[in-house]
Image (cartoon, rainbow, N blue to C red; front, top):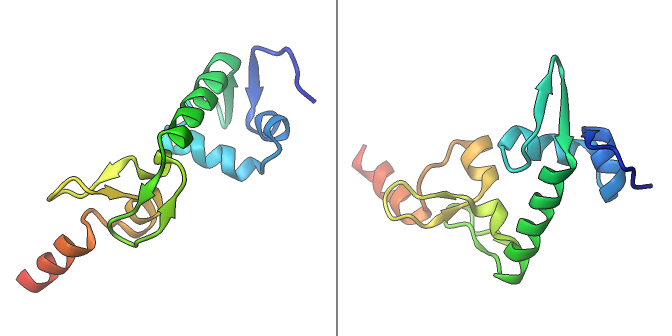
Length: 115
């Protein structure tokens, strides 16, 4: 149920969008969804939420892409905001943040062979 509040908690944003609070928390922590931190809590402004949703629409319309590191296809360019340090090919959030991969398969193999 949407509210008219100017600032929403992570849980309220999740409820409003019909997703898990973990997804919203991940978007906030990655910087994709701006939020103010008040102590241990995050608050998302309605304006920032609306701007994020508009950017997401454009990303889907503009098409997605494939991660050059793992080969996973993403419908939205939002998951492919990082790039290979050597050639600039898109690298997904999961490879970049969770696995620490900074290069595409081609340059990762070359880097490993050079060691």
